[in-house]
Length: 193
Length: 318
Image 1 (cartoon, each protein chain N blue to C red):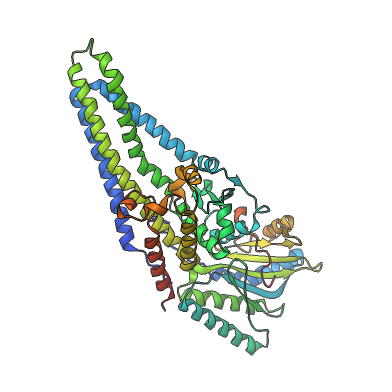
Image 2 (cartoon, rainbow over the protein chains, first blue to last red):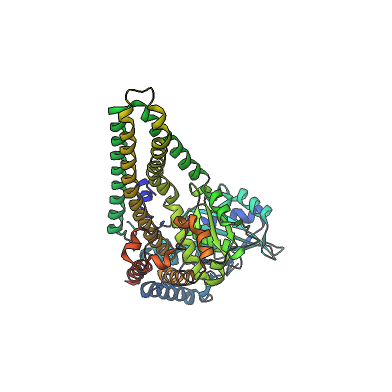
């Protein structure tokens, strides 16, 4: 934000950065080789709905788009949930081997929102992983920073910081990881995780 | 391709705010020129008073700027809270910071029942966000989010810095009024004995005092005007950030309505923090009259609601 914008009190909503998502499939391969975590095939997009008709229409279009692509490939329809903070999560489920399709779906949601001028409403995209011991892990993509960070929830709203830091180290060369640890905000109870 | 944007800036507000700041700057320049002119023309030793006022005023301004977070927190009797102590509040702030790409501020809760919130700190790295228990008790999560996004917009707009710079002039003018008043009472008599120029010493102090009073009055009104514009700007940015202008509007009506019912003792305790509050504790009666609004740090509820209704309409358009 420029000096003049600050002085005059007109913050511009931050536009998201989408294309980085396509680096996820190759990062997933690295992740599996190094730690044994494999994608569950589930991913979600989280955004803040805007009041009014315009946004409701865009949201409906996106849902139909995903349902159509799901019906074609024979996967589950898109699940829509609203969390307690008022954010909407669109959950897309594929087979665990279809991470490319999952990323394409997620990207379609994101670009539909951006194309209709609602890019600033995007919060994060989340792709779920699991290892043989059924430990849960999510790679969270922060749209506004263009960075990823790991989120490993443990029962009782605690997070496995050791595992998260290990994952960060593994993926450092593959993805742009968030270096500022204070930005690794937890997404407790995120759908699809 | 540039992404389509729905977030058009409010040019009218930008122009009015810019003009207010320009006028403040103009008053400042005129004030400095007048003081230098007066002291240089007649008697050099009166310059000492001006010098003292600038040093002391500057010290006060810089001090309150650097310690704004600590001063505000201790005035409000607020306690910093960890994510474990207030998970929901932290969750809301986390999400707003991620949406706006801002560093997360420290979060405090003030144990008063007055429903209010403020954000302070010299920059976004040292920002503190404080909400009262009364606010958390009265508002729904969506309304609370609206209030917090309004406060985070204050942080993004660096309002503490802008208002400190703007108040600097008024602080110096205020100090000069006091100094020249005491200078007349005590200093003037002492000098009369040995100094040849003593005839002119007294009127000069009077002139400095008169100029300072005028400057103080004008800059006071301009600062209040600027503060009201900054509030409107923060409402606007906050509403665009969450995409829910109506939730913020509903929070405003709830907060303003219940503040009017609070007994005066609490109001007086909260008075020094007014400029940073979400809704000022004293606004209920003041906002009634046009004249009262001139002195108010916050715009009237009607104005704020009207702006939010306009934003809501714009967001809903295809």
